Image (cartoon, rainbow, N blue to C red):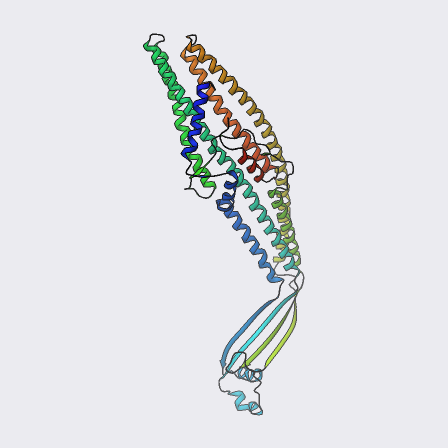
Amino acid sequence: MSTPFRWIRGLALLALAPSLSAQAPLSLGEAFRRADVLGYGNRVASATARAADARAAATLRGILPTVRAEAGWVRSTDPLATFGFLMRQRLVTPQAFDPASLNFPAARSDVGTGVVLEAPLLNVDAWAGRSAAGHAAAAAGASAEWVATGSRLDVVRAYFGAVLATEQVATLEAANIAARSHVRQAESAVANGIVTRSDALLASVKQGEVETQLVAARGQAALSRLQLALLLGSPNDTGFTLPVVVPRHMDGAGDTATPAARADVRMAEAGVAAATAARRAADAALLPRVNGFARYDWHDPRALAGGPSMWTVGVMASWSPFSGGAELAARRNAAADVQAARAGSEAVRAGATLEVQAADIAVTVATRALAIASDAVTQATEAHRIVGRKYDGGLAAVTELLDAQATELGVRLAEAKARYDLLVAHAMQVRAHGTDLTTMAVALDAADGIRE
């Protein structure tokens, strides 16, 4: 960048920070925390995982015993019922066997109170179903984790996309000021008869092109902040301060030295385990079930829990080897689900391997692109300076000067974009390797601010 251009751009960058000084600073780490809690996708995924946990807990009903209390009032003139009431209430007397009383009993009431215990003793399908639900809950948890890492990657893009937009606005503002200066110089030269009117017109056209880019960049900067706010779950809150320059140096930001198992791979593996357990449950549905029960009862004509108590215990076995073929269909369906889950898991693993390779290549390409862009900035800045001195000495036409300025502006915008591309490539690489993006956020937060 030519010296005047550099100073103007620096002042524009410095001017942007005070304009936001009343707003709360937002670090990348804090943006991650907001997105984790308030981001729409994360909230949906988290709720889905909690629902899966609840479904897994519900399967305990076929494993743990149940206890319930019962109470009821019955009044009847049915001979069998009334005599049963007498027996349960322990009120049978010799007169109760009078044929007239047995055939035509008076209305009698019974208040029954009971406590019932039911205990599954051997329900193999329930245990297999419990295992399937547990693996399904683990898959939902891993899915929520993968959604969270994707959300953080989106936050990196949006956060530094807004930073890039701010930097580009500052660069274009500096270029617009310089272009206006060239227009004034050309108009002065026209007035002095040094150049023709066409030079001033060309300078004005170039300045208009720069101003058009500036207007578009300002709109993009506003939109970028809205996009970031949406990812953070607060679409109407853009009152935050961001860095004004995309960092160039990110020591440790792309560290993938200790990759963990990717959440999407763990999700697929848990899906296979859940399908396998569900198949076992379908097979176990053909086995006998054994359940136990116990009752403790009271019967009285008027009061709850009145009268002498009584108890009953028992064990019941049931077996349904064939119910219209439903069990066989369930087994076939479960076997197909296992095959589908295994194929899906293999696809996820293969896709993860490809994604890692693509991310590594993207970082290599972006690193080289940034180096080339940085060299181009140095070269274009020097070329602009040389042409400016030639123009001041009357040895270059204004079109040559304007072309040199446009070239420098273009490569500076491209260099800023190359820094952004490298940063995003690093973030994609970190996620592809299954490494936590929090480490990257710490490194980037340490590198933010105005840096030249």
